[in-house]
Amino acid sequence: MIETELTKFLPDLIEVENLFKEYGELNIKHKFSDGGDRIVNTVIVNGKAYAFGTFLGKIGEIERKRLIKRYAKLAIYKTLSKIFNVSLPWGSLTGIRPTKLAYQEIAKSGGFYDFFKDTLLVSEEKTALTAEVINSQKGIYETADGGSDFFVFIPFCPSRCEYCSFISQDVRGAEKLMAEYVPALIREINESAKYIKRLRSIYIGGGTPVALSDKDLGKVLSAIDKFNTGVEFTVEAGRPDAITKENLAILKAHGVTRISVNPQTFNDDTLKRIGRNHTASDLLRAYELAKNDFYVNMDLIAGLPEETAEIFYDTLNKTIALDPDNITVHTLCVKKGSRLAETASGLTAGDCAKCVDYAHERLNDAGYNAYYLYRQKYMAGNLENVGYSEKGKECVFNIDTMEEIADVVACGANAISKRVKNGGEIIERYALPKDVKTYLNKSDEILRKKEEFFR
Image (cartoon, rainbow, N blue to C red; front, side, top):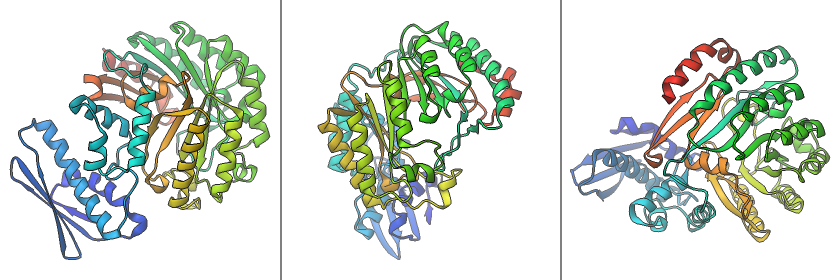
């Protein structure tokens, strides 16, 4: 529990405290002294005080507020790190996008390495990983008039995975809702095309978009045909049990260039345990259908319930042997709203770290480079999710999304449109209702507010 004089930053300080939850809980008092050019953060635990002074110099008010929050978080981190004798892989960083912070520091000082290691106390390994990602993004990353990505959300799945916290409907029994959703979505797509500045990519996510009937899938894709300029076009097919020869043919006919075929694991017992209605052999069948016509992304998860590190290693090696274009390694993130939230019993933080490190080494050896990464709350071991790609096969949408360098024109329940300003320094968002029925009932209001947002 933390008491602080910087009450507006309390949620941020609690995020740092949560990094150490598995090591113990303490009563923490945080005091802040502002001397103008110099600030002092004092952290008191069990009557012992730890003081940290920082010279800020003459800076603008916005930057000053940012640095006050940063050094308050750093003071909490240094204190708990000392008390528990633990150094975490990402140091005091709690944000989702480490690379975005690195890019900001590069723009300011020309480099980020010393800033990450010496100021934020990020480990050598994670600092190097950030550098690898930035290097892989050369030629794709841009901030001057970053253009627009077009995003469509399909909130339906063949079944609900135990670790999932997304707002999605099981297609079993959702026929009436789907019949109403598709026309409303197409209307929004048609009305939203005019907000595209310079199209960089198209992404249809979910949920599982191919859970739609072939007829409805074709209708949604036909609406997108009208403005597709031949850019990267990804459909998150995802679930092998929903991928068919017929729906892949529809995707190809409408210019889709990339799909996901996600194993998560090659262990059939685990697949059954987490609520996925497919087997490893189903995955192989779907991949064989797709591999010659699309770039293929595959997602794996380290830390699934009752899996050992050896089971994860086996999954990773089998995935590499298939030679997909992209492999993303996720660390299990158990969120509120998922069925695993109260029952998860995956790997220890140390074992998850071993899995992540093993994946990085094996994928690099196999010719894959890390090209995007992001972090989430409640991740095992305070680790990260990393997307790896063979050279020249990076996914533009993934880079744009993680670095927030392009506008997002988003359609569908739970979709979030973004306007990016000042090279990503300012992000404005317009979020649509998460609930499908609410989205349908407010369709006129959504279109009106979206017009206001983009115009």
